[in-house]
Length: 484
Image (cartoon, rainbow, N blue to C red; front, side, top):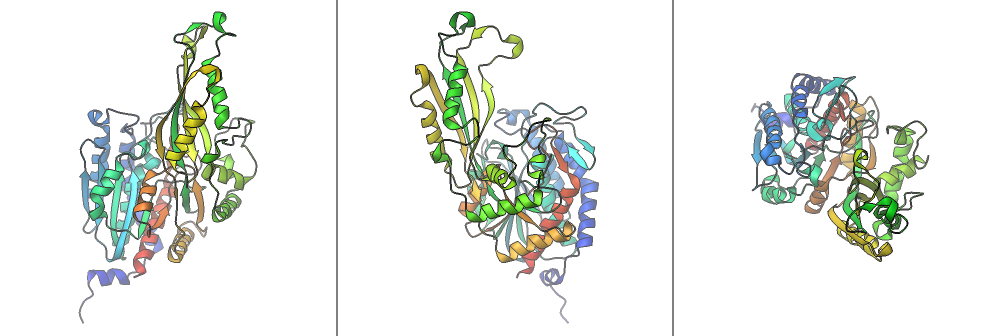
């Protein structure tokens, strides 16, 4: 009898869940967590937050750390390459030959948000700390774990001889700055990426730590710097107040053109989009699963609470409706230097989250027009659109994928099925891929669950959840490979 080929043997193997979980747990304990600890220590802030990133060398240290770990994995045919185009941030490109037809693209990023104030005692952005099963520090959850999880899932399949499609893993270093370098890489690497039937992204959120969460949509983002200037230089407030309008008060008036301060509703109608009925239904299911956790997961002060008690409305607010946050300011001195002076200028940094189907360029034009038209008191008003990123809406899940993710969740989360829900953040890569691969299926998930606090102080990676999520990715890859 002719012995089976490697491909035939792999295709005949069936994934054993217990062996899978044991393999993933060993990998996390022995090498993934220790390497993530080293990764957290590196202050590789995204280019928007460290313009001299190349000279500082932190990004390259993080890239080399992750790439070196990946090269050591016992994965048949694995190639790992650090690709650099011009002066752009690097990407890590990995290719693993398949033992089943097709191509799967797995995506993550390794750049980080800045430090942020408010870390509790004993913690810090570059100070890794493990406590109660959580790995604290900047970037572990968003999104340093992604490269490790992706390769661990593939390695676990090969350890059992289970078939999987050709896999391409792409880890970028510019996501927290809007992925402005990524289009050049996607174009440059297009022949090597191929045409994936399945895209797996590990940079999203989770409603709880009890099951697998799939992201069905992502909001877009618009960054606008609003500057109001009334006088050429600061003057004594006792002399000028009542005569010279405060630049801050003018800014408040302009913000009232954007947002109803009583309800938070965005008043520029061009920023609203109709919400598909299917997404409304998903929001209701997610709200029922989560209960009070829809809002209780945030670090409220005593007595503070959400804008409404209706969980489904809260889900839709953070996933489909435009929202405004003022995230920075200039022109206001710190309290220690704040004299009795009528200041000449106020600048506010506005972050507008847009519905998944919005056009950020059109939204930017609408916001700029609303803020700059007929300025109060003839003040000099400038609304500078700094950046705009499109949102994304997933295509309907194919029947095989819907069943695969639900069964994977039930297998590795003690019987709890998968839940679909939109996310309020932005992953620019999803829009790029959706346009480039309109026939692809998308599995968008992540570890950013309650309290994980990406971008803020006390960010943590829930280690057990990350292990279970890795098992789910392996499970879905196995089911994808078995389809042929």
